[in-house]
Length: 272
Figure 1 (tube, rainbow, N blue to C red):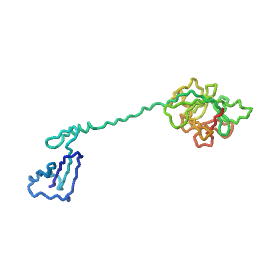
Figure 2 (figure 1 turned 180 degrees about the vertical axis):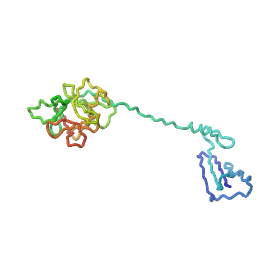
Figure 3 (figure 1 turned 45 degrees about the vertical axis):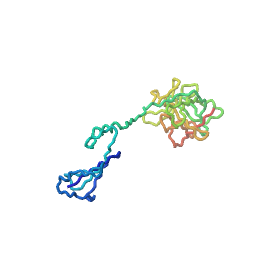
Figure 4 (figure 1 turned 60 degrees about the horizontal axis):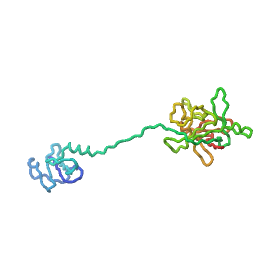
């Protein structure tokens, strides 16, 4: 027959149960009668030892229970036990409610500033961006050409407009590159699953505000301008991250979008 003991101490500690094996060193009671095992021995005015038979095991079990006498909003029962409902109410009343607040997925917005820079764009090999003639089988685009003094009239002047992002990041300065005195802008677009391409897009309107996912595709006009070193700038597509405006080494080649690293150049200078 196993023994089940309970110590009840008046303290503000938590309740802990300890189970000891048969070798715990407790002596069997002198009284052979099982009824005399159902007893209470006062060992201290605040500590009581209760021994009771355990019907399912022959091991000696000592269950030490450290009971909390005073808890907020809990009434002590006359038997020394706590009411389960009162304990549950105490736990629920003292639970700290944690509320997870998720920010709304606001659409990225780019607002045009009042500053505008008039410039020409040249790659690091001193080739100038010029506008191609419009053949019947090609869209409007740019080419990079080494211009001599007699061909300077073909140089394209750009109107570069900086924008301010609603969620600024360290990607560079958002800009639009439009051809001065026209409604043509450099755009990075994609058709189907093909790689993004660079072309000139006709735009009507002031483009004061551009939002990501614009239904008119105006977000394809935005590029992150970043300075590299002291003289050069790169232009990365905002809509298609990782794709940069690039030129080939040879003259009269089309200006395209490329991923780096590439054998094409992505470094440009802005000149008056």
